[in-house]
Length: 352
Ligand code: NAI
Ligand code: MG
Image (cartoon, rainbow, N blue to C red; front, side, top):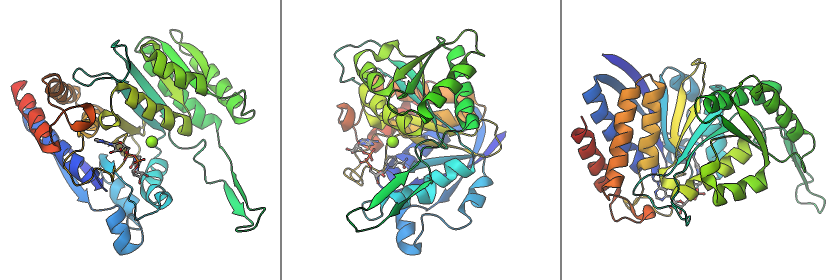
């Protein structure tokens, strides 16, 4: 039996609802496919912050490093500044574990209505650079409270950082339709973005079947709304990829269905799987949360752990639950989180 130890951080808000829902599905799948998924639960997040003044213990990363993968819900609470919740947990995990790829599939699902007038299927992979770029620690504040108060934040692009994102995206494109779209803004941002363009271009050239298009991000945002079905793989910097993937998920129906993988492709450290959405304090505790983004992230985790059949089984189960008309309120349905999860479990058994 194949055993994997998985660190689980449900986190805050609806994370505490969608993570248990997804784990139930993962356990059912594991039973059918002969996998031993050993889950270890960590109660880190904003409540932990309230008790301890930090989002996770000082040796939190060492504890996580012992696991094969990390399964995260969301962190963030109205009681804790977002800078604390993000920089105290998620960003250190992404950086220290060199999870430099944030892979975000954007796909239409039967049973989930897109807000677009067209019903052409959308199937895009967004590859977001996840370690550097605009989310840098370089900068500072001066003259606090004075009329000339100043804030500076530098964008950091390294050849290593941009080229490894480009390699990942180009090889994905090579396995699909061969079309790589790079999000840029080199007309306005004249140092870092032309460098980004050059490194993407040089790297993509090493993949003969791949054509690369550089699209200014404002035009690309419009493209994502007007003709998303013409896009294949998008590679984007940390900030631009963050924004484009929320837009992409909205265009396919709801941020509640969008999954993501924070990957350390070399496998030197555990990778982290989480939905794109946050802790949704506005609906937390009401049983309204859509667990699809979390369940789909679980399928990506199974794939990453080397179990494509189990991943495909879980994927087809939540897709068939949606196709059969089960869905939560955010996508126009009436199911609660637990009712939808029960429909997925039924579909798992039906396809076993
Ligand atoms: P959000 O994604 O939590 O919510 C945005 C909107 O989408 C809300 O109206 C919410 O009800 C809805 N929504 C989100 N997920 C849903 C789901 N699964 N089912 C149904 N509806 C869903 O983003 P927001 O409001 O900007 O952030 C809330 C908190 O989450 C903040 O503290 C933020 O920093 C944090 N956050 C954490 C992330 C993470 O842990 N990776 C990512 C994004 C935000
Ligand atoms: Mg985001």
